[in-house]
Amino acid sequence: MNRVELLAPAGNLEKLKIAINYGADAVYGGTSTFSLRIRSGKEFDIDSFKEGIDYAHERGKKVYVTINGFPFNSQLKLYENHLAKMRDLNPDAFIVSSPGVIKMAHKVAPEIPIHLSTQANVMNAMDAQVYYDMGVRRIIAAREISLKDCEAIKREIPDLELEIFVHGSMCFAYSGRCLISALQNGRVPNRGSCANDCRFPYEIYAHNPESGTTFKLEEESEVGTYIMNAKDMNLASHVDEILASGVIDSLKIEGRTKSPYYVATTTRSYRQAIDDYYAGVFDANRYQKELNTTQNRGFTDAYLISRPFEKNDTQSQGFTIQEGTHQVVALIGEDGKSWRCKDKICVGDIVEIVLPVGATLEEMENEYGKIELGDEGKWWLTIKKIISEKGRKEFECIHSGNLNAIILPTKFPSYSILRRDIRQARLNKGLIPEPQAIQRRED
Image (cartoon, rainbow, N blue to C red; front, side, top):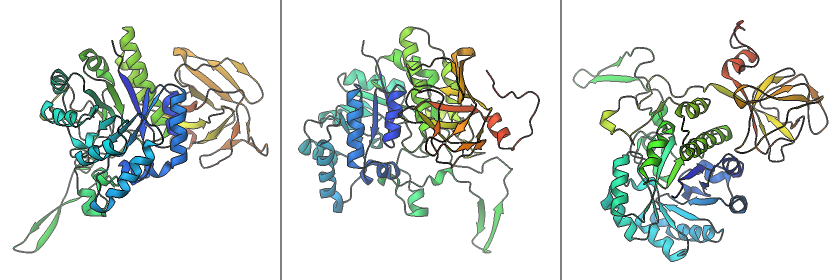
């Protein structure tokens, strides 16, 4: 039996390494404006992207290059040159969107497998067959597809690999087909520069052309303000059904522009869900508890299991985003010797340690801190001293924005994360009074 692949976003070199350390089998990312995420495309240059590919290959992992923008006539030569540059980095596949680029990729890099982007919106076996006949090895299905339709495609074309999104932002329209951002800001979604206008609050007005009168339609507070804001996809509870179908080759997490913590947490959660399924110990509540630690727009299981017209929970009309259950305190670097602050932390604080997949620690204590293993297998760090790695400057408290690398009490696994319960984070900032029920550490 072939095990399903877990595919995670790589918005920059650090996130690429985090995704791999937290359990990804493969990552996707790219350089330049052709990668359909201009912001993340700018975070990679050729050298750093090559470093990322080498890092992945050294660990037996894969890298798929996103070249899924839609080129204008004036950009065709630039696109061809970019394909050649990416070919020379020896990636594991190109992700492209249009028939013309498929043809161009075959010409420029015939040895590189081609994956069809979700931008092509494939939802049926007929369209899948057309692209398969053009030499596409894998199709990243439209987010609106059902599992039954995936099964139908696989029956017709058993050698075609199918990849589906299981977590992350949902587009208000068919992926990339929305023009609201282009209308309001001149930023074209299918060129990688969507301004996420669907996430904004809107006011509704009525206009009478006969009298020239315009008046605002008053809305109830928190109801209908974010009229186009889609909730985030979360299919963790359905991983067992998806894998049991036997027709899906890769589970994809959206989020190249999201935080390192998001990449780590989502990748680790879906890694656990996949491994637990194969081990016969699948527990949806376990994965959802972790995924709820991340910021989100509310979660929906989208359309893979239920058809769009059967869903009534896909919109988040009262808010654009909400805090997760936890706040990141600090990120630990690749060398594992120091941490950098992401939220206020003081001497005496006790924070949870989130470890990469397969990593562990040993209980210990010294002048810098105390590491102990608590309930449910969670690791905790008590901060005893906050001393900068350079200059040896000592702090009683340190705040986000302070760029000092702070010494750890012992070497940690690369890219470990320190976090705390969101209530404690708000308490530390003085945003809520301290109730007796809140402890400094909550197991």
